[in-house]
Amino acid sequence: MVFRSQLYRNRGFVQLLLAHLISRWGDNFTLILASFLMAHLTGDPLKGGVIFALGIVAEIFAEILAGSYVEHRPLRPIMIRFDLYRAGLGLSLLFPLLFPSWSWWILVVIFVNSVM
Image 1: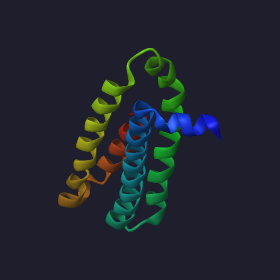
Image 2: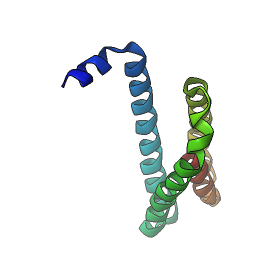
Image 3: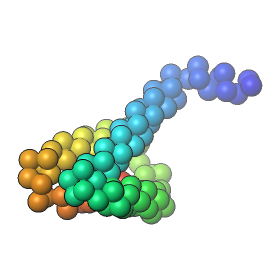
Image 4: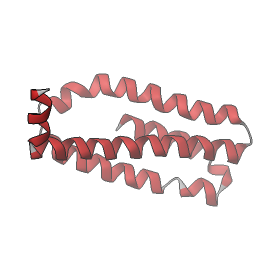
């Protein structure tokens, strides 16, 4: 494909693609980790499944609603800002490990992380 080879020669596109892939990998890793963490803390695998479903549903609705907002703004600062927010949220998943009664915090983190 002529277009594909030209597209991958564009340095800006390749950087944006790699940043997006790393961001998606981090999102999916957090979602899977939180599902296992909730199942481990509560002893109920169904709650781990609820975490997974909540993350996917929140992401779908957020993509629909945020599309018009992001479309008219520069992408790079938005991606960097939200990736830093999500890193902080990911670190806050340590609270339920230290305080098992905080298992509800996992729901909050996954919902907010999926919306961002």
